[in-house]
Image 1 (cartoon, rainbow, N blue to C red):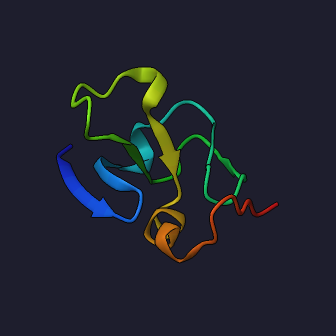
Image 2: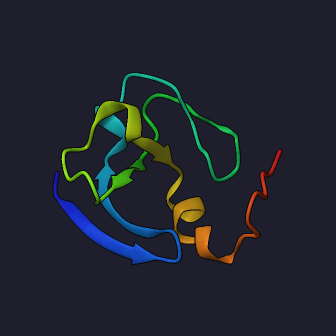
Length: 79
């Protein structure tokens, strides 16, 4: 898996694309607040300012939610 550096209104983030077959845990997407079941392809992101990818800073997103994050209002949470 490769890690890319992406910039947006929310700053720079490292982004790693995770193929579905490698995931064994469930996660909750911060973009839509919906479940990412195990086995689903998604992206893992973390702020570029620390550069280490500290576990507490990592977030697991649906790819469309990650790509749409700049178009959402601040504080907006979809339920």
